[in-house]
Image (cartoon, rainbow, N blue to C red; front, side, top):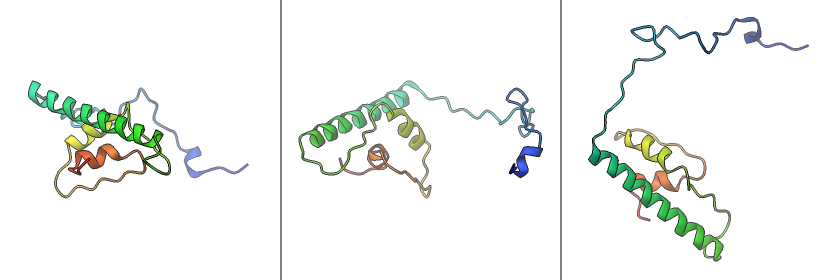
Length: 109
């Protein structure tokens, strides 16, 4: 029977914390508190993404868009939260269902 090198190594259980944080926690907690205006702005972005995705889906069903259409509906918060931390010079790599990423980075709908 073939084995891999990691099979002989003992794995850390899910309940055993990693010891790489300053207090022994898996990571230092550096959460950012967002005020009400920032939360509303993020919600507004998610609504705009949903409206774009709905319009794109309608266009696809009407035959105005060829090929395949993989919409991002239901995942708006993923791209919005991820790209809210984007800094100039950062790279963004996506595979498909990436309309939201392009819109959030400033593309015209």
